[in-house]
Image 1 (cartoon, rainbow, N blue to C red):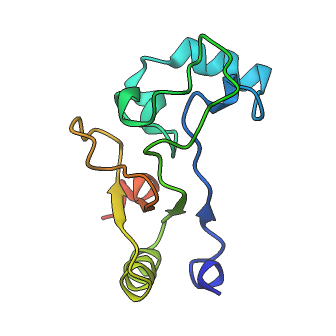
Image 2 (cartoon, rainbow, N blue to C red):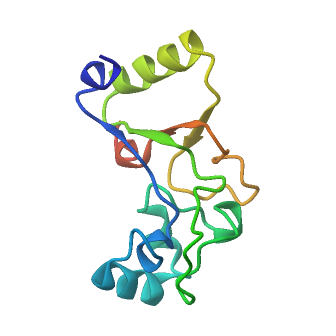
Image 3 (cartoon, rainbow, N blue to C red):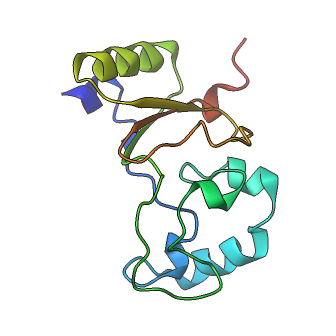
Length: 131
């Protein structure tokens, strides 16, 4: 019901290195992640990535395939908002269900405040050109 209220914009974010690890390995995506690992623009385009990967988790690496890549501090659910109504519905849902809500726009919070383990992420990245 919540996903319908936000036009199907609910997604499950993964740590940015998950594509290079057992269980979620994708050779093409892993090659891209390795090449772009320190690219701030690429990282801001990834819903589960933070500007500094240390805010994501310590079990995933793009350089060492691990069988223990876990969610870490990456939120368990996210809303890829594109309309003000998506923002409103997400905030209401978080309040009504007592969920920790974190907000990420382009991912430039260098202090890790746009991520938290077990939280709901409101991703505003695709709203950055709204006037």
